[in-house]
Image (cartoon, rainbow, N blue to C red; front, side, top):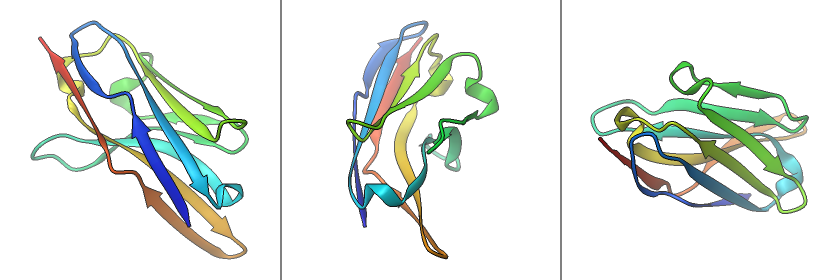
Length: 119
């Protein structure tokens, strides 16, 4: 089992920045990939960014060049630095962890944190 707790959401003006944090606990050694997804009202949940245990990052097209994902293994925490925010970035942001134990894979979600970008 893995528990994820997000923090850092809030209200920001367009063009501003926010940093989200996701602290993991539990069986953290089983985490293969960590990431962020978001869901806006009336829309499907979409990929924001992921980062593997080895540090390889992947980004959704809408955020490329503006967002950056990183991890601090000593703190068991993954960060999402969001710059040049746009109103269309408004959504609930969810932390995600994908684990693998032998041949069994699972994924876990945090409770979500609201990000609102005003125009």
